[in-house]
Image (cartoon, rainbow, N blue to C red; front, side, top):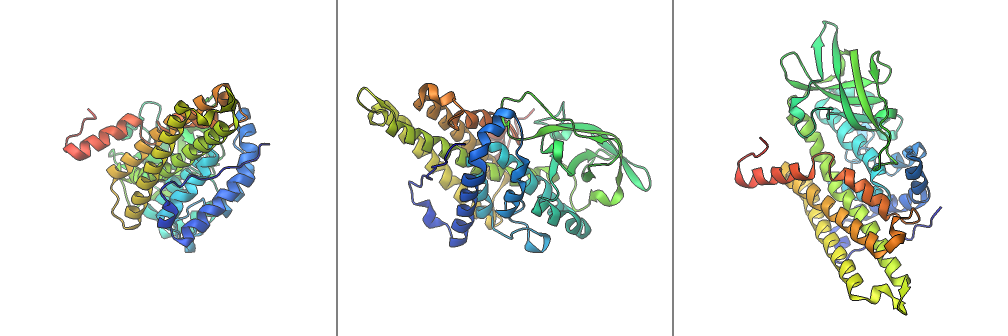
Length: 392
């Protein structure tokens, strides 16, 4: 088990922009990651196992639905608090952050926003406490960047719906108790259904042989004539805008989370460069290493300011989907570039499990693709500034 000596960089005194509550929430998450995640995460990644023992701790620090009102089991926090929690968790591991992101933004958020009061009361408290874990089924084997082309469908059978189809690359799927599944009705309209483990014909085979997000459980969702009670349809929003609204919340969390991974890589590289002696002095005293480190802290600072401002806009209800796409794309690219540069600072030691950098680098190769690929987010910005879609 390695000791976590992480010190967070704050080159522009961004802490002064945070409230006391923000800092209390962030520091609690930071200390929990140091105590509960860092000592075990390298072993979990090597074994390709999600450490289920941390689910209770994630719930305790408010990582499950932090912005969901307290009456439904959430913490009732604002969007900046949510972002800071995601930042600290991803500083530990992107896969662990994925687990929290899915639970919060892709499971609890749609139930709260699109579901009935009965659905909120039935599911949200148990999801907030970690008693229930959830997953989100949108991506299909043949429909990733074009989710509107989905073929998963359900038919009205009078007293129930009959659901058929398949989803893939689904975080939390192998152990999820509930799945938020997006499927087309007989008119081709997309709706969200709450599917529970144990329903006949519903299975969740695990995806193996991943080089990325190895400490996160990924799987498929298979629906073979699954009977879904009619009360499990979320009635308050339909169409492709419904799942995309969930993705806005998740992408916002990723924009913060990626900063955490970058900060961990930077802190590791800075610490190593000060300690590693070559040619009779620490390598931190060489121009090329200082260039790397100076560029890292510059990019982290820019990303921190972007995420903070986006959080303010989210709190005010003013953030657009395009603004969220820009932040997700920019901050993940920033993080993966820093991981690669930090690996160079450590030389051969950079690939060792003794350090977190290579694990972050591999994880970020997934983060840069999921919930909107790097290129798709670029096209979203392009469409927003020109008014012309370039997807087809």
